Amino acid sequence: MFELFISNPLVLMMIEVLVICIKVVVVTLVVFSLPLPLTYIERKVAGHIQVRLGPYRVGPHGILQPLADMIKLIFKEDIIPYKADPWLFKIAPIIAMVPAFAVFATIPFGEKVTIPFIDKEVTLYISDMDTGILYVLAIAGLSVYGIILGGWASNSKYALLGGLRSSAQMISYELALSFACIGVVMVVNSLSLVDIVRAQSGWHWNILYQPLGFVIFAIAGLAEINRIPFDLPEDEGTLGAGYHAEYSSMRFAFFMLTEYVAMVSMSVLMVILFFGGWDGPGFLPGIVWFLIKVAFIIYVIIWTRFTYPRYRYDQLMTIGWKILLPLSLLNILITGLVVI
Amino acid sequence: MNGNHYNLNLKDILKKVFFVDLIQGLFITFNYTFSKTITLRYPDEEKWIPYRRFRGLHTLNRNKEGKELCVGCELCQKSCPTQCITVVPMQDKTGKGIADRIAYRWEINLLRCMFCGLCEDACPTEALKLGREYELANTSMQRSLWTKEELLAAQEIPVEFDGGVIVRARLERDDKGLKVIPDMSVQKRWW
Image (tube, rainbow over all chains, first blue to last red; front, side, top):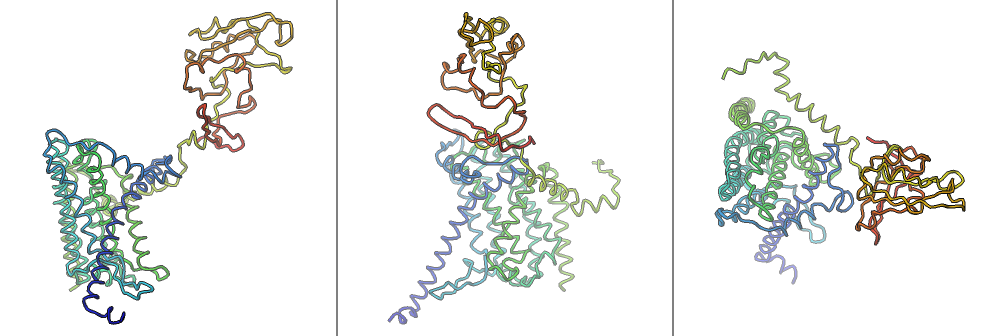
């Protein structure tokens, strides 16, 4: 009876849907809670680089500091400026946040695993699109709308300038970023992220074949996620706090969440495109290698934040248009010549 | 824009292309990441023990036989710029002090005291000394008025102890307030 029930096509479909739903919920929850440890790590690394200790009082070695911060942010007053556009002001953080999460729909975290006891094969990604990398780049670029709208709706000069800078920066660096990805795509011959990772298995990591592409991707990626040395949209020295100058409470938390999720997704993308995804020595499961690599890249991003000063705005534009863009075109040319 | 007349030789160009300076910068901050912190974990875990020359809470000393050195000469009271010391002398034949005159009352109002140390300089018998106790915060103004009996009591940090180190400490909370209790056996040099 049970055999009959389990082989019913309708039931099979239901199980598939259920599995996808569970995956979506798990990924969303994990990504949603990631900024908590990341803020802690960032503050700890910052502290130790500056020969301080970082958070230390809340819990042992300050481990509960992010929770305290979260509670503080929830209970703070949610201020909407008198002259702001209330509707846009409210919706902007959501517009910024949703694409940051949507990116994770195609991110593969590992190969198929078999869940014990029920013998069901589950893939460690929500979907394997044929044009996965295109989807990721397109959706990641959407996040900037939230930032611009937030800056515009605040009706504040600093916020507007922050939003403008962000859009200009995004346009300049999105090109170089996409061209760097094209190099990878030419080597691998597929746009699917899963295929890209599979093609790199056995230490054929793309960083060995695309060193120039990797450098361009790393620099443009840093600029895409508004991290130092390219965090012009939230330049404290000249813009107060940049595009989220007028935001407080949970809306500000959403913007911060977006930034951290963008950092994670950029690191994940870098691992998938250049560091072979879940490929690694066999003694650990693939997903562990994947997470180790992602953690390392996140650490490097935080590390650079507290090492380098910020670029000037004209320098930012010069690097984007005069250096990275021609270099990425050159990279495509070289790759094309070698591949053919 | 004719500003870019740098004489770039090959070495400089290569340095720029391979981010040599940036990577050197990264290594500097990496070393600092694992260097010793300068943060003093003051009330919870560590406490700074000052040198002997430190001017903290006043102490009234006794000589080796345990007799009070203070003879109630009132010089400290007269030398005090903020007039925070009150001395009332009295005759005493019981031998509590080194002479037949001791202080009947010796009070200091720490709310006014600026720890200049002039009283210490004025003291002819070296009875008065500014000690190393510096946690003087109170919840009531009344408790900033220190009397002779409290000041005659032995201080937490012995005089023989050199100071100038950080020692292990622990924070104790009770009804009276907070207290940081040092543990002299575990010492650490200042950064």
